[in-house]
Image 1: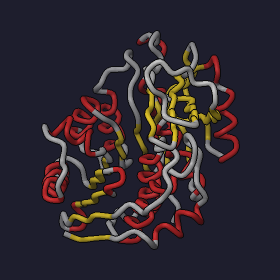
Image 2: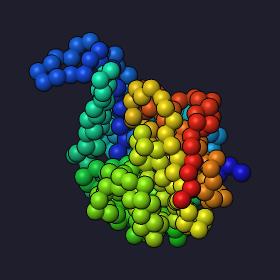
Image 3: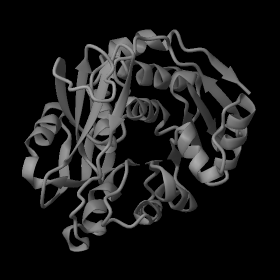
Image 4: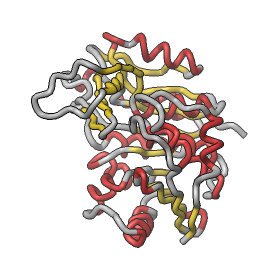
Length: 313
């Protein structure tokens, strides 16, 4: 049965991908490139993917009123309900530069001039308390305290709504203490809260076990190394899903696609099975074939899922 999802995005972004003929060197003036701009932000990227999968989705969080039109058009296209709180100013613009030799990304700070009175936690969370599952995702503006995800998770738990957390650093560490249903750090983000970046299979398994003490289900993404999965409901068993071989264009939103696809299959039963693992890894890989935060076709995800190798530990 389909579940109504909500998402919270506190740092939306217009993701700009510049595709250059060659990787820039110091002193270069880049003139020959193509440019694509897509509205996103981790929670909105997840909302778009879940809507593509047929779920009713409401998007909450904050959005800059100055250049809101692309975001409204995105939500209208996918039928995402708009519960975003308008705040003064523009939304941040992140830039990914890609070339045949490699890529790099510049992530700007969201809403640097946001004031505490410009946003309200209760107003943002209200529509999420009526949903079946809530995805809290992304970085925070300076004016938002790092404890905000922990406060939201606690309120969602009181309302009986499973909370999915995709964050980093202190917001992730504090959020973990509130007991989320699902978390999805990458390997670097694991290192920030566990003290060491996992690199070997044994280290990833140890990280999963440690994080399961706080979260019911854990996904640790490792880029081309695939993704690790573990859940209490499955007796704490740990699985690894490989990353299908694809021609990588842009890694923007790949982790968001992986997480949203997993949520599509994981809820409401909350069992960890190979089908969900295969499709989550496939969605992450398929997203890297697309520019910016653009979504890949679901048929492509289904095709790549057959290439994912799942190993149980």
